[in-house]
Image (cartoon, rainbow, N blue to C red; front, top):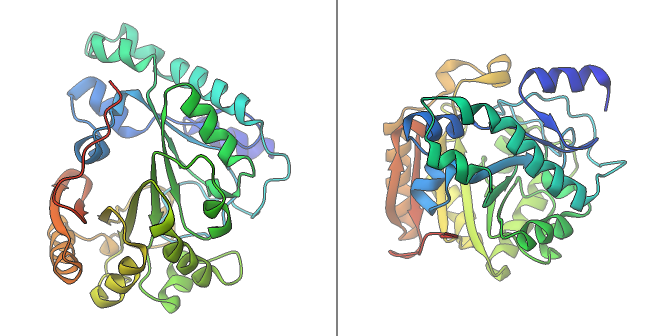
Length: 310
């Protein structure tokens, strides 16, 4: 990685754990520690925000340059030339997390009990930036986290179905982002860097029912771009048969502001309306919502147990 890029990432709060891997505290960690406001994933799925590491094994590699992505996009590669060792990534990510949160130990406003718990992470979100399925030792990475009693949440854009098909072990929960209802919008909004990206995403959706893990389809919704296509989304979701569907509104923050406008940000009511229509089409349950994150949770079954590692 170029030194100039490393400097940009470090200034943004990334802790590098190798040449192509990194950790970064999310906004909701601070909110949980100081204001008892957890991430919506804690509300929906039961994970503990303050015990979650947000990391990536593919820091500067992706298969798409999505217009709505708020991360720094220096992506110019769709492969990792010198991948970091999975055991090293796991050990360094835990060390980096502890270092990043160390200041909360002396903060009188921070929840002391949560701080002590946070020093022993129990969850990892393999996302952050880049496309994690480009990391060639992803199965080993997941296995290393599981050995340490850490649940794994893999977030992918679905363009590498062959990787998902061969994962062993599978992550605790698998998210696939479906942010376009058809190929035309896919090409304009997600700007694929590989050929047959739409075809590959559909192969992933067809694969999902056979994967024995908790599965989520996330629809990132961008107003005036990809929202008025309920029937087409319903067809895609029917292929995947996920346990959960997350319609989530685009937020006008970060580097996305260089590519699309504030008018592209839907209201929570827009998300709620979309979700109600989609739930009716699919016979899913409107299970929960978080207005502060502009997200709704739809479930295939009325009751699905939450993840509990304590």
